Image 1 (cartoon, rainbow, N blue to C red):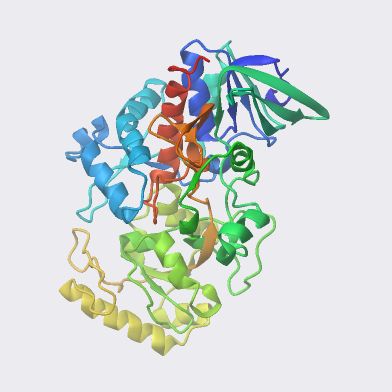
Image 2 (image 1 turned 180 degrees about the horizontal axis):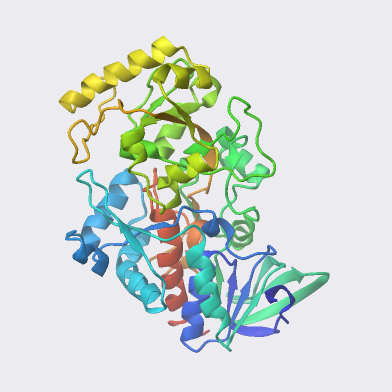
Length: 470
């Protein structure tokens, strides 16, 4: 058991946090011959990574070539910047672009398997998917097989140690009932996640989302952020924290949170579903990013949006990534069905006439391909009438806002070195994954959350050894 692993007094590299970013960073460093110690606060590895949908954005892969998809890093870079409204830190985005294809090939070289999701909408197909939680667990197994890697769960790191030159030289941690100090001869890598589970930090940076449904890793309380702050670390993107629209309401119309069941995210709107409020009215361009939709949904009655779709859209469901698996959502009770629109409206406590009028109007827009109300481009998905919602049975996914990650954090340079408030690297300290800010900018491009963990984790694992000797 990794929870009982003996913690050495010294390692070349100490990695703090065993989500995908930490696992990839530790595996990368260990493969280079370094003695690596991976410490995880929780009793299980994975963090937010094992709760994420499983999709990652890569460009220029062999899967794309086989599917006839023309793509490259520059196109991906522009997409990330565009979704981030050009508020992203270019150095962090460039680091992702430099390492993304190499990371994909490295993961495949370890035996990881991906599928390419074809969008069917004219957008570039670059979502490479794995089952929920698969990648972190698979690569963790690869890490455990290395003799120069030690992994320990139930080990909460609470301070970074420095020398008189202000270089990070190790950590202090609590493992079980014991306090331990571990020296890092080369570097410390923070991959400790965000702070979606910290009411104090949410109240400080994102008070609007204190009461949002929490869907991140259960140990994501901002520990790495606080420790780096103590050393003068800078931060980025704190003003852009948004919840994600699309979090499930299992027993609607009962709005109480299920204590024993994790909410899920589903996005049939990505394949043509419309979103209506309790009045039965559309209120948003459904093609917008779900972080943007979340802010709009927060202003609707009871902050609820119903994703309404038909059997044609249900047939576009796919098992990975998990937010595209609305068939699975139906089988597990998250998606509601009915034979008619009127029956569906009654189940949703919506006026049947209002919902029918909304759908009739939308179908008229679908016939022309334009949406004068919200500017949505309505696709037919290669099928005549494919954009209409007119084929029984009909479905609804009651949705609200969930805080999956915080999308902000420590400022880093292109080598994943943590920067202080004046922009200078803090010697010996690196970071990757959700604890890093600057990458997403003002909004989130689907697939870059897990992608950021894997790609920047790989970058940190390489960079933490390159020139890291005191």
